[in-house]
Amino acid sequence: MTLRLFPIIPALATMAGACTLSIEANMPEVEVTQHGVKMQGVPKANLLGDVSVTTSFTFSSSNTAWAKRMNSEVFLHQVSVAATGGLPNLDFVKVAHLTMADSTSSEKTTEIASYDRDENAQSSSAIEVSTPAPIDITSVWSADNTVIELQMAGRVPEQNWTVDVTLKMAGKITYKF
Image (cartoon, rainbow, N blue to C red; front, top):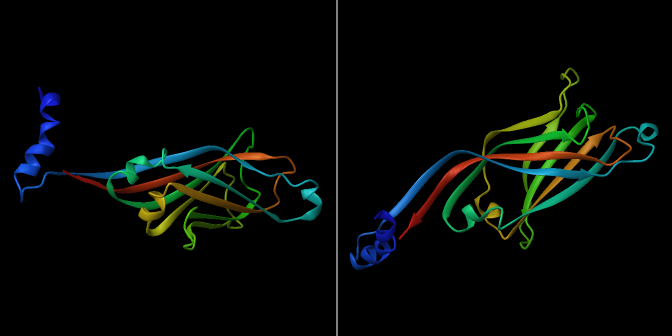
């Protein structure tokens, strides 16, 4: 019976004039992961020393539809980059930067993570960067195409390698009838 009445709710709300029906939901934590992000190997990297490699990937509106179709607020609070594809760890990474941008906009990019490896850091297969304060990524996240650029520097592998990039976010969605 509830399903039959649901299409009537917007009509009743419209007829009520000043009355508005709205639905709000807090999202305490949402994780979005891009699996198998390909990083370019650098031939003879062991002879070169530290080098930097950069790659980018795109989240399309099909990945971010929950933010685009609703009046949402999206805040990023942590980024994780994890070794995959047989790569045992990311100990060779000395510096990593991640930025986010709307591919159709001329606005500047937003830095979402910056990592500098501590000399005494323990071996790890993941780099996790928490932001000091949540970063408002609402407008760029709801774009048709959101581009994430990942730059990593250090004594990178000679062969191509892959990582998984996870964005941990929170926010609120609101839908008004």
